Image 1 (spheres, rainbow, N blue to C red):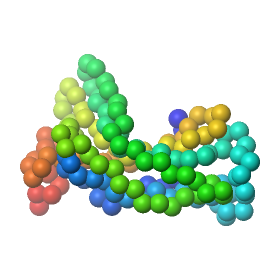
Image 2 (tube, one colour):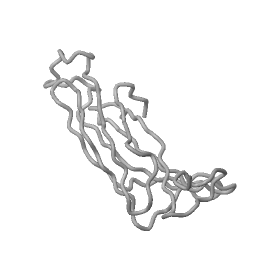
Image 3 (tube, rainbow, N blue to C red):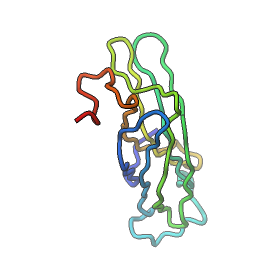
Image 4 (cartoon, rainbow, N blue to C red):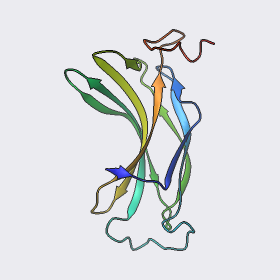
Length: 146
């Protein structure tokens, strides 16, 4: 996958608790920046839709894992642009974000384009899942404790 600089993911709050949600807006500029290209006959490699996904992955020693926890689809208009709100729910049982010596639990919101006969493009933003009303295992205090 490669980076898509025409997609912008604006997250209302990059911190959520288990059972909470990440909300925001996905926007994408048209294929030519001005909306004059009609993409009803999409050429090879043109984008058709975008998936906004909440992804959790583990990193470190031992097994690594990556899962899509929640996702919504966004259809592009005929010029290849979009602007739509989204909401992605964190499971009530977590897991919370964790940054340890042996393992890390990392969360992100990714916008992934669906490209016809080509590699998909991706834009992502890191987010943090914190314990309910507590402190996580971080070098810094819980962001909501102050």
